[in-house]
Length: 258
Image (cartoon, rainbow, N blue to C red; front, side, top):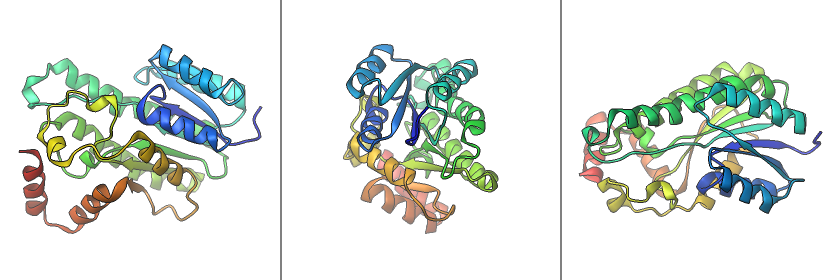
């Protein structure tokens, strides 16, 4: 059983998840590593050490795998302080250029997988002082993004679920928050077919996003702080679109994407 705080991170084998796992481990947390990339998990678990981390093969689209991972984590640690729903996939290009099954896969991982985690982790978070769920959203959840339509749709849904559960679960003492980066320098954006990345660039690193996850995880203010944009540009877009009329928001989104 662990006396130190414990965090479970999905999509932990690479990119943002791996950077977050390293950061929390550096700060003395015990880290659960969930992913379908077994080799990547094994390498990271070996790097962090058995005293500090446990690798758990986890396909977030499968509720049974979630149940097994959460139970195994609880057996090892006796506590879950934070769940980071980071696992996600992306398709790009004109909407009709991707097979329908790929659109369904994006919804299954980015939305249903995250929903599975929220639903099944809640009993483990109950009674934990400061317990919280941190969901990976995106600035694509601020205004619909051309050439990233289905990905953007899932991030809008993540934003809505986060806002709703942050209200529902306040009386249970569980905060639900989301992280909203722009494009991040990870393998997810390799070969992306969206003009917006050419216009805006991928200025953020996985470590930048991990630092924002850390800030959200250790935040001690009120429940009203729900959304966490990453970096100046994401913060500017979030604030600007929140006060602009829809026609102006659409104009900016179109200028970025076309």
